[in-house]
Image 1 (cartoon, one colour):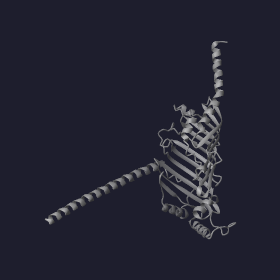
Image 2: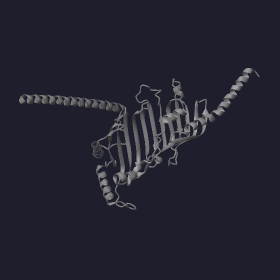
Image 3: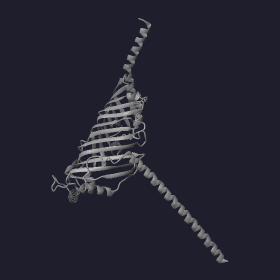
Image 4: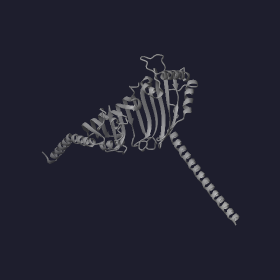
Length: 400
């Protein structure tokens, strides 16, 4: 056998051995990486390498909270595919993509730290960078589940999303670099606990610390009876039947946002003369009777719906809304023109930019007014001193 042939065979053997051993070393690396994440810890069952694709797959990833009371792991993903995004590589950008299959996220909200599980303590950006040491340009999750336990802690109300899908493209702005919102985001899911569905579409700039965005969000046909714990707690009523849909558009630029929520109820019934095992107080009986009468007055009879439009504007620290537009919206739906379960298409990213400009202008005007007020105060102070000196000289002259 020729020397060159022996060398080639040796190289092939080494590559095969390296390929067989590589998943073992990667698995050890990943588990060592995830063993200590502060108050959380993680573990992976297996790793599979696909050298030709430039990818590897993580199987049965679990992240759980240490010393927590929550039995379910914070995150469980049966399969994660981490790979190079080849279409971006052909454009001269070495970036990656992450795809998660049937992920489960279990959030728990509580003032008790051991009963709380939100993942806010974790640096998720660092974890993803360590798992795939190139920048992520695309993230997707398929057929996932998200549980929000004690979302409204006062009533112990939970919310779940199933068949949850999300796809985020162009996170690192490889394409469409001139766009102010270069990253398209889509998400959808079912809301089985409350009935109905959720849909979300947005354009985002995810490279900023506080992302800019322009989104459309809808929750469709949620069952009102599923909200009775909240209705009893905050309205002293409960619902007998009906659905509610919520439509929202919002845009944010540099932490300043503008948008609206549009709730629409259909077939809503609040009052029933006698309920099974009726334990209503007298106060709740009459509250429900009045609420039923009010909803009948404010209902659009043709569509059997009560609706309004709630405008929102403000900053991430402070949200502003007014009561009169809400009341006018209810009356408009009842007596002028019924709202529809469609987006108004009245909110654009430009509106958020203009809102920020208006805010800057208002601040400049405020500072200008404050400077003018200080000048007036200084002027009055000088005038007062002159008056005092004049009075003092007059007294000295009189004393002579």
